[in-house]
Image 1 (cartoon, rainbow, N blue to C red):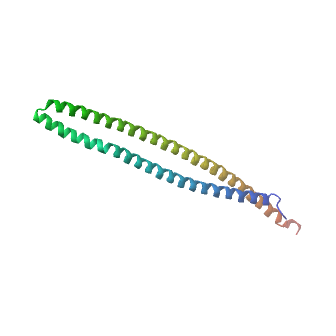
Image 2: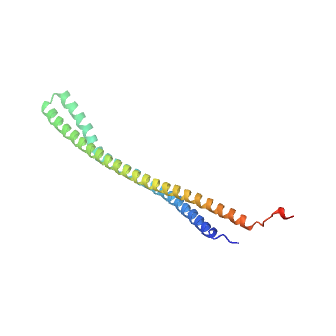
Length: 166
C-alpha cells in the first residue's frame, strides 16, 4: 500500500536539503567576498599611506634643512636671514599640516567605506542565517511529517493479529 503524502514529503525534504546546501555555499562565497574586500581595503590603505608619505617626505627634508640653516643664521647673528628662514619654515610647516589634514580626511573616508561594507556583509550574513534557520525548521517539520507517514504506512502494512478467535 502506498502512502499518498510520502512521495511529496520526500520530495519536499530533498528540496529543503538542497536549499540548505545552497545557503551553506552562499555563506562560503560571502566569506570569500569578505576576505577579498578586506584585502582590497588593506591595499588601498597601504597605497594611501605611501602616497601621503611621498608628499610629506620632501617637505620634512626641507623642514629639517631650514631648521639647520636657521640655527646657523641665529648663531651667526644674521637676523635678516633668520627672519626669512623662519617664514620659509612656517610655510613648510603649514604645507605639512594641510597634507596631514588631507591624509586624515582620506583615512576617515576609507574607514567609513570599510564600515559600510562590513555592515553590508553582516546584513547579508544575517539574511543567510535567517534563511538557513527557517529552512532547517521546515526540514524538521518535513522529517516529522515523513516519520508520521512512515508510521502510518507501517501500521497499515501490519496484518491484523487478533488472537481472540482462537
